[in-house]
Structure formats: C-alpha cells, structure tokens
Figure 1 (spheres, rainbow, N blue to C red):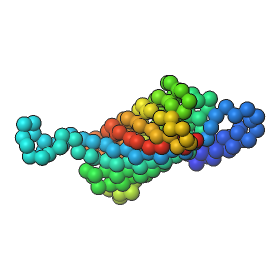
Figure 2 (figure 1 turned 90 degrees about the horizontal axis):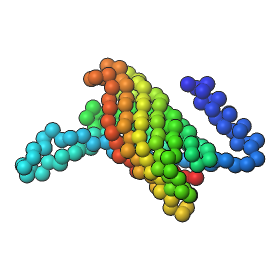
Figure 3 (figure 1 turned 180 degrees about the horizontal axis):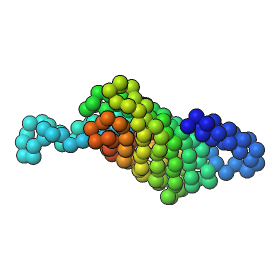
Figure 4 (figure 1 turned 135 degrees about the vertical axis):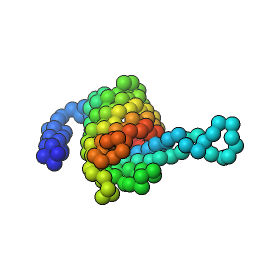
Length: 178
C-alpha cells in the first residue's frame, strides 16, 4: 500500500510539472457525515417523545485529489469514524474514484466509489477493509470554496465483528476547495 501511495504521488507530481496545458485541478475536500438507524424504542401512535431515527455514527473525513477535465477525480482521504452503539473509533484511509455525471461550471452531480483500509482504535476488534459507494452534488458558490452534499453506502469488513461487517448509509455535507 505504501509503495502504491508513493508511486501515485510521484507520478502525479511529474505529470503536472511537465504538462503545458492544464487539463485538471488539484483540490482539497472535507466532509462530515452522520449515519442514522431506526430507534428500537419508537412506537407509532405513542407520544413518548422518542424519535424514529437516531444517530448511530459520525464520520469526519478530509482528502486531497486531482480532477481531470471536469469528468474524473481521484483523491486520497483519511478521517475519523466514531460508532455510538459500539463505543469504538476507527481511522479510515482510502482512495476515492469519482465520475461526474453532469457538470456546469463548478456545479457537479457525481457518483463515487471508495476503497481502502480501516484502522481500529479499540483492541477488541481487528483492522478491516473499507468500501463505499454513493452519489453527491457539488454546488458552485462563486469562490474556491464549494459546498457538497453526499449520500454514501459504507461497508466496513471487520473480523470478529457481529456479522463480519458493519454496513450503513450516511448523509454528508462538506466543502471542496479548488
């Protein structure tokens, strides 16, 4: 994995330094995602002030990437995930492959795929693999700071976990800086 990261960074630097026509842009991104689950104590018709959905996980992510010809983007990301139900924190490191389905200026509607590694902070679980698939929308703001909205399906394969994986869907907001 380390050799791949070094190779990717070296190739990226060499290609951008020798290119005469700039076909792409380097960007930074940051996101905060919140995952919800159905509240087990909720009862329809009962006014016990229980909510139907309750938060189950918070995901804080940031990354650096390169967007080529406003169509394809590749980025390296890391962050911190905290799972409220299991009282565990994890550190995901992953690559994101993004394909813009529609663009107009800095506005973009896109699909994304995440793949990487999940590092544990709790001793009771092992490290695992991380995958994600989703859609997002980047809004043009008239400046270099563009807000984003994402819906992502996450799959975290963790050995010795209940079913061997932790799957969820999260809603995220963030910013992309070009």
